[in-house]
Length: 170
Image 1 (tube, rainbow, N blue to C red):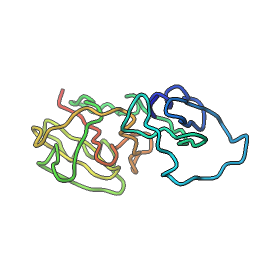
Image 2 (image 1 turned 135 degrees about the vertical axis):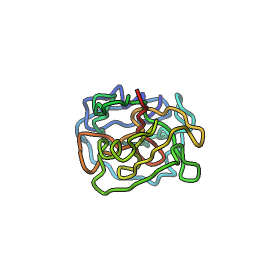
Image 3 (image 1 turned 90 degrees about the vertical axis):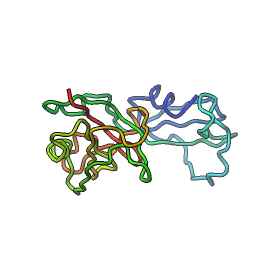
């Protein structure tokens, strides 16, 4: 079990939770009263991803489901191809040649700002980065990692913390 596996299994429900390291539960509401327990009470490693914590005895890591994109939420940009969700780091930016910030960022705005560059990407909802090559290593991350909606267009995704929604020249 992992967060991603349980979330996928519970798609269509409002909530999902993991317990005992390998159990997954789904639901649209709470049938019994519940209270938050200290985070330290949840210490069982997830059987499918030991870097995640999957509850404990009578303790559940609980998540509210969100609608997640798998590509269609990424607009088509003339001359560019969607390249996926990629890792990035504040101290070692992947696209380091140009940068802009806008509280109303959209993918189209970033594409216009980065016109002429080989790559562009949005991050943390409001940031836009450009480059002709990768200044630092990156790897493709799960699509669900790039979950911040663009503040200028809530139908688009603009990366997340240390996650870059990236496009490359076609």
